[in-house]
Length: 145
Image (cartoon, rainbow, N blue to C red; front, side, top):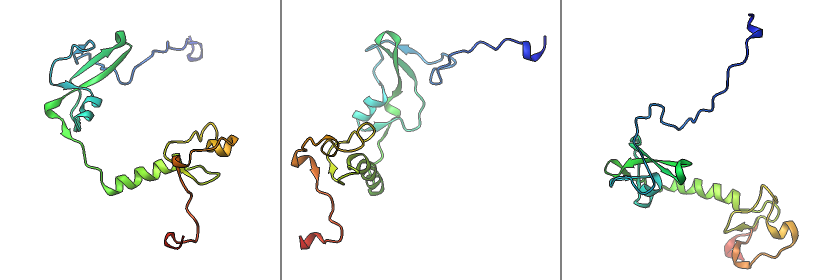
């Protein structure tokens, strides 16, 4: 049989996050031993895994959802927010909160993917005056206003 005549191999669905060796213990919902926590639970305690690998898995919703479990005693404190991180975060949020049509920066994220602008620019729905910052005035000093 020639190479062109061979049937294609069967496709196999592979979970890239699954434990390939099956070496980690799996616990049911609310049955994990003390001293283990998920990433969210560590974050509530202002901790992070700190490079340590997960030690167990917890299953939720009948096995349809799961999360890694980490040892709390090996967790490290979260890194403090630096000025550079804060500036980068503010820049990213400004992109999501600023209307490209009227240049107002809202205190919430705008539906830019679906509408492309704020509701007031899109369909005329008035925005509450306390929900946005006024656009910066170009060429005017704030003290002169």
